[in-house]
Length: 71
Image 1: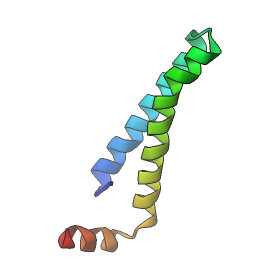
Image 2: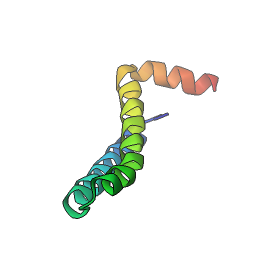
Image 3: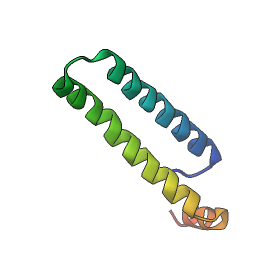
Image 4: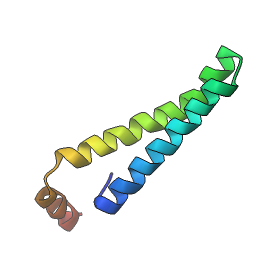
């Protein structure tokens, strides 16, 4: 779960990094089965991080402060 803007920015950078990894695999891997096996982990992590970003952006900052105080 993303708790603040700094974690949000770090998560966006990680998403970009993973997307670049998958783009590089697309260019270099000649075997489609190997590509899918190699890319699937990266893509699953991108999906998970995108859900975290969506949750963070869908919450108003006052809600984040309140939930952090109760945790």
